[in-house]
Amino acid sequence: MIYVLAAIGALTIAVLVWKAFGPAVTDRPHTRKAPIPPDDDPEFLRRLDEQRRQSRPTEED
Image (tube, rainbow, N blue to C red; front, side, top):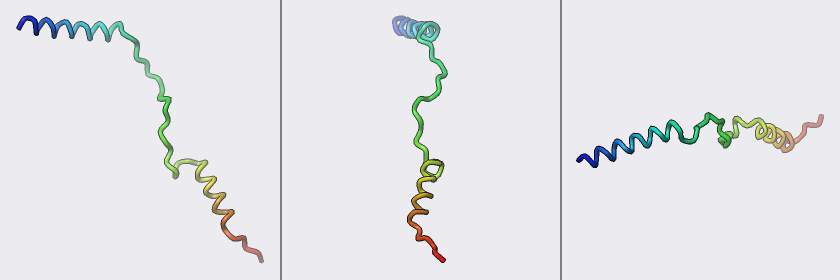
């Protein structure tokens, strides 16, 4: 039983030492961008509008 308590204590101290002196975790911005849904993507909407204008027959009076 004493060995179990000693192991738990050693692990606890190891974790605390790691947190105190281990590699620093910085609050860096996410480098991976989430995909933009089509209805929020201005470039997609612009291309869609251009395609719609090109496919619509022109009205000549």
